[in-house]
Length: 208
Image 1: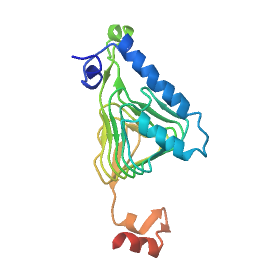
Image 2: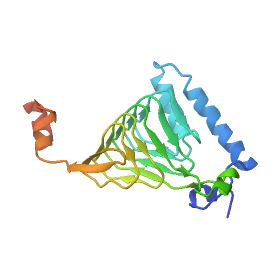
Image 3: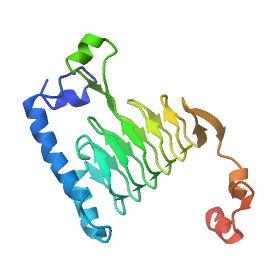
Image 4: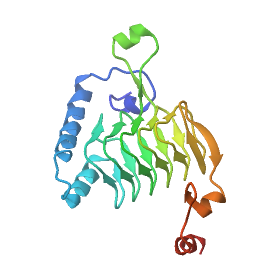
C-alpha cells in the first residue's frame, strides 16, 4: 500500500513518517497564511480556500482562525457552507460537508483515532475514519463529531453535543452522547424560535 493511501484505508499507521510530515507541513504553512489574512480580504480568503481544500464550493466561507491537521487538504465543502470562528478539522482522512450547511463557533470534526491498547498508542499509531455532514445541516456552537460518523441532510445538532453515532436526516439531535430528540415537523413551519412565528412573507417563499 502506498504511503498516502494508508491515511484513507482505516488501517493502523505511523503518522510521523518523513514523507507524511513533509507534505503535511506544506499544507500547514498555507493554513498559517490563511489565518493571517485581514477580515476585509474576502476574495483572497476564498481563493486560498480553493487551493487549500480538496473541494470548496461557491460562496464557501470559513472565519479565521481555522485549524486543520492537514490544512484542509482532505476537506470537501459544498457551496454556501459557512463555518464560524475556531473551526477545528482533524482531516487526516476525508471530511465531507454538504451545500448550505452552517457550522457554529468552536466546532470540531475529527477523523483520527488512536488504539485503546496502551502499547500501540505509546508508539503513536493511529487510524482514520471519514466524517460526512449532509446538506443544509446546522451544527451549533461547541459540537464535536468523532471519527466515522455521518449526519443526514437538514438535521440540526444542538450546541455542545458530542456526536458518537450516525444521525439520520430531518431531525433535531443534542446531548452527550448526542441522541435524536425529534423530527423536524409542522411546528417548525410556523415557529423559528420558541413562540416566535415565521413572518408570512417568508413562509410564502418556501411554500411555493
